[in-house]
Image 1 (cartoon, rainbow, N blue to C red):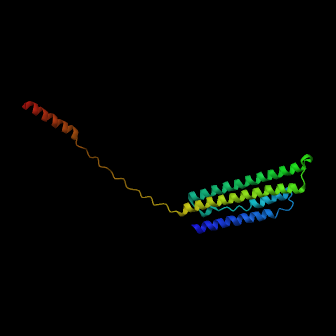
Image 2: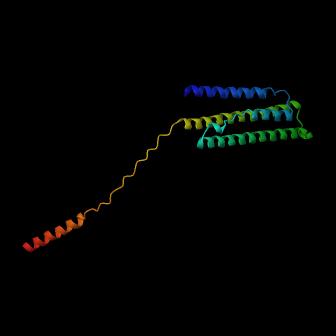
Image 3: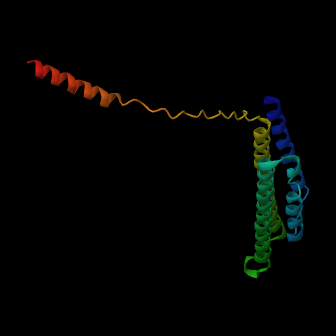
Length: 178
């Protein structure tokens, strides 16, 4: 299990470096359109697991996890694109006009933040899928149904009633002998 974790950790780091270098390639003066393209490129790096490799509840869990990850990437992308649009709009305003370098720096920061969020999402997704796989790999103990033993309807002797009758009879004899 330790080997798999190390390998998983290395894959996450490698994925992060790949995303970081993809963002770095846009580090030159970015335009809003290029920034949106960079965010889109990061979003495309999300790798999902096909639920077809699973059955039953595990397949449903994978499909649900895929849907959640897809929705999260869409939200990250939409938020980044909105921030990019706001930065571009502010730059178009004469009162708050920024230099091309300042705008590019802001756009780079937005892209970097979005790509880091997607990288983190991928790591969380991978952990969730690993957990589903681990649950599938653990065999469930066989359910052994114990046959219910039918209890025979046996009438219990009324010992308390009989005992009390005996005591009364003995008391009557004792009283009668006195």
